[in-house]
Image (cartoon, helix red, strand yellow):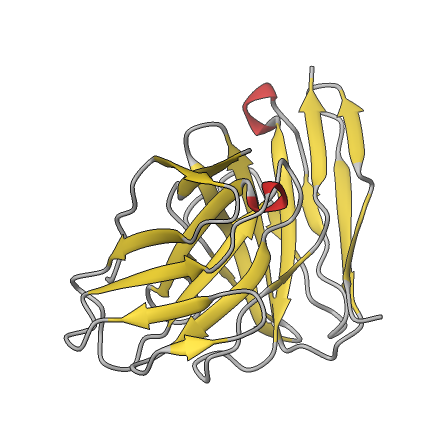
Length: 109
Length: 114
């Protein structure tokens, strides 16, 4: 079962890029990598997902290594509202998602 | 607006008194799931459903029941709540799994069992 490893916490200066790493060394070939974030105790919010290629949307960019064993979520210009817990997720078995404990990102003024 | 609606948002109850937390989605999603979130443990899956009348256990199903009689609704039932079920609960839904779609989450239900 593919599971993920993320740093417990990170800081980032406001306006700078936030780079959040994730290791998923046992990921299978057909498993997608998803990123979500959770602000305070709100419901987790979808950010982005990818399979092999790098992806970009209005919120973030996702860089997946060629061997797919790790990925990085990039918030290009972090704001105070980006302070949240960020979860890197891969599908485990069947239709189950393993969330883990995520990375707590603090954006500093 | 596409959304997952949970009710109630907050609930305080006593040990042993049966309760139901409702979850409804308006996106015609096949897949629905319940999670609980506890400090230091992240989100853990309780039950999930791939379609009407199809449900399966997640990682922490003990003490919970679910039903999926209609596609849009996926209630979580605690037949005899205990204090260790005090937690923040999230319902989520998704279209077909395995094609890269993620979840849409509800706003959460904070349950306290005394």
